[in-house]
Image (cartoon, helix red, strand yellow):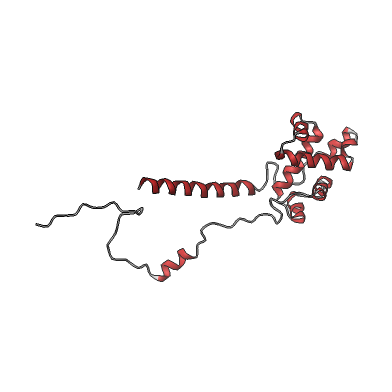
Length: 178
């Protein structure tokens, strides 16, 4: 009687399969091959590029009655959400919110955008205007609706990056288990 060999643990993720290969018809395969791995995300032309003082000046001088975040974003090559963030910084500085001046005076690199907005406002003389004139400027541009907070480009791209990292981490964990 022949002795049976003990089964060896395979080095791959799946157990060895010696069953015959079943081919999927070409017309069914083609559909799945045409699906992209990830959906491409449209982002602004100048996304993640350093803002120039002229861009900030153009945003601060924009007339809320005649200009929208989307139109100005297309003109500057920036996302509407990025414009809204910079405009919000201007509004917080004008209103004198307690943390706004802390951010402006901070040396932290994460607050450089606040310092740039403040610098441009100072150069334009906005901070020298009477308070009533300043408050007239402290208004958001036209938005698609009152509760709109941007297009979330940054959040979508961050989620995409995090998803990729999670996948790689899980794949490494599975390989360690085997």
